[in-house]
Image (cartoon, rainbow, N blue to C red):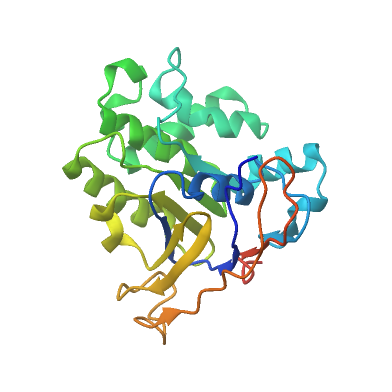
Length: 252
């Protein structure tokens, strides 16, 4: 039995970039999987964009993800047989759009991330940084209210990683959007408005940085948060212990 998380009690706010940091195996990916409704919890409170996720059916969770969640994967997860624009169009097609307008909108998104000249390229014809840009465009095309990025800089060089984080800030940090980035790459910490550190499944530290988010400066811009690592256990096989997470409570 693996206890991936043992202490989770926090709110995540819109209009700022929240970084979940810590060493590999500390529970970061497990936590964002729960937040994005791809891993179920069986007890405790989990409110995401005003929805009580544990009480949704599997169909309702799938519909919630399709409408509200954009996910940038560590390994890009682009479909190799589709062009860049076709990959980016996938969320719109899932949400009921016909292919032609979806691809047209995808080309606009690719232009926004600097890939206007690669819209017809296959993933195999793109560099790692370009593939990550496609992945970000795909995650953002349906205007999700929750963007989750899992190690977005781990498969690319340092310079490209800086460019990717600048792009994530540009497209994701909005007053009506929650943006969470999981990383153990200390080189990108300066891009966060808030840094939550996990160690061995426990919230070890929760602090704000000096950066000003989309909602303007915080009165506690440099003050550390009080860590609320006071729950007993989050069990992967049967998530039994209290889980208290609220995301985007001020969004409409």
